[in-house]
Length: 296
Figure (tube, helix red, strand yellow):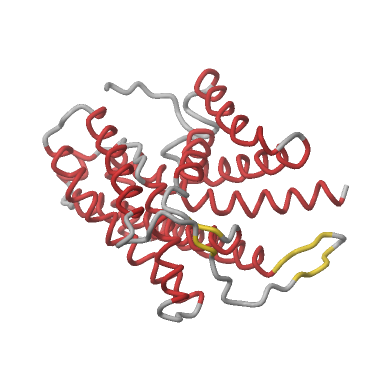
């Protein structure tokens, strides 16, 4: 029984990282109905920025996370302005934006692989603090897990406050509901969209650093699988619904860990994507999403 709860704890750890990535997917989709497949690569960049902040600049761990979040915000806003905004303003079919997002993803992965940038090799991720383990009710809880849970909780609470209790959050909800009406109400829609990309990137950047200290090895293509699984989590919870993305992330994280622990690690990816197929076939709006007709 202790083994079961230990794996449950590990699932929460992985789900916390997925939650920080999936929120970017769901917020961007909620605002402009775009599935930003380059988002997993922003997560990858966040891991690298944290790596160099710790190893080259000798930043404190928490400062390194903030450093990574800020750089990811800047890059994602630039991507939105350069790659997505021109197409969005031309009212092109959504498939064009989706293809562009895939192209941006490939560009970031291969650009990061250049030797003059990050290089193609795997890098061991530093852990800038001593790992301490605690025995709690028969479970082993590490200092890394405590840090991951704490930072994720703080970021989720900040995001919840921002969206539900501030004028910026009200503007984001208005744009998500009806961009044209929001524009008539005096809301700068372009700025709100850029802000949404920035917020999603900040969370993904933090997730990249946390992923690095949990699973201490990074490489330029590391964002592909976590990004796709975070997308599955967003679809499972109801893409466009923030609480759904968080719940879906923890479900996917636990299912993945339980699969590896009780069945086989070779099935963990297959089961995650099987869940995507089942959800799309049985309840495409997800657990918390509302059924709506969308014209492509």
